[in-house]
Length: 423
Image (cartoon, rainbow, N blue to C red; front, side, top):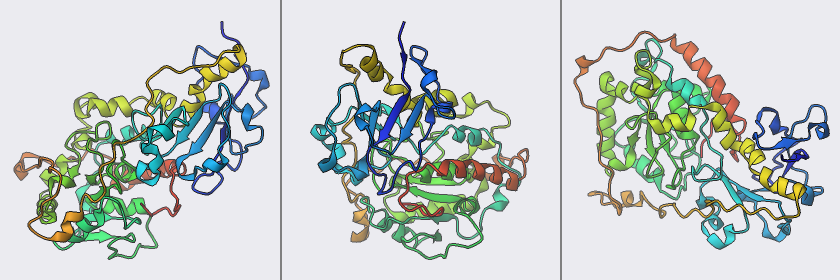
């Protein structure tokens, strides 16, 4: 039988985008289940605390159960020497483009684990959450289509106008062929309204340009998550595969299936005028009244987000609290050094080369250096479908979803904390 271990203490050793990560101790263990094979001596836990605490105080750092480093704030000049049975975790929700050392296997040997959006990471830190299942299982609200803005079907909000993919060049050309409202810094043509939040604005448009600033494996951010949550159709460009992120395989429009922006504009114009075809992209909500989740949603999507408790165990700081326990036990139960012999994903070399959309500046005929994705379009006749009227009023539906997202927003890693700004 294992001994009762002292409470776990994790130190966030670096800054977090230049700021202190935790202004006060974060008692993350309060809602994080302790693995059955371990025991914590709760008599050592102060009143109001928990079995696992995170802190930004580096005092007595060598006694901590583990050290967490933020990739964007690494300073090797201040890097602490190793301590036996004290794992080091590199945390990031950004792509390796922002921290190139992450692609170097030798440099990544400084860390024992990676906590990131990549599904292969030991600890999953993602922009998505199981709340996406709540929305995927909601029937579309009444008069859903009537709430969508007329005349300008596409919305874009972006701050990073120098994205390595060159996405802004594609969008600039797209705007010549169809109305795109851009409220961010990039290709701006609209002033952000004072009386609406970003989420409320997203709900008004049929389509959102959920295009990432880099093309890296599993790198899908809040752009995609919030688009689904606000029941718009995402136009995406990011990882080569969105497995695990999509309610159905036909719930997004892939930008790289349309090397010529005019072709994408023509298809969006068609969907804007054809409610039947448009609503096919939202079939996972349209059919929620009549079909069970297993009959509507992709198995990978259900596996990833369908069980909130299992997701908690493998993600965010709860997963780190649980993951350091073998090291913590080795330190206190014996004089041995714990060796994690599992295969661990550390160096990420999955990002595509920069300049994916640079060819746009050369003009027609457009000849990208990559192979376009096959198009998968909805073209069935309008009279085959009747718009559902079984959902709740659209105002109540949006209010509930916005409250959910705003709760999650507080833990998102944005350097610019303005509620309506994307990168």
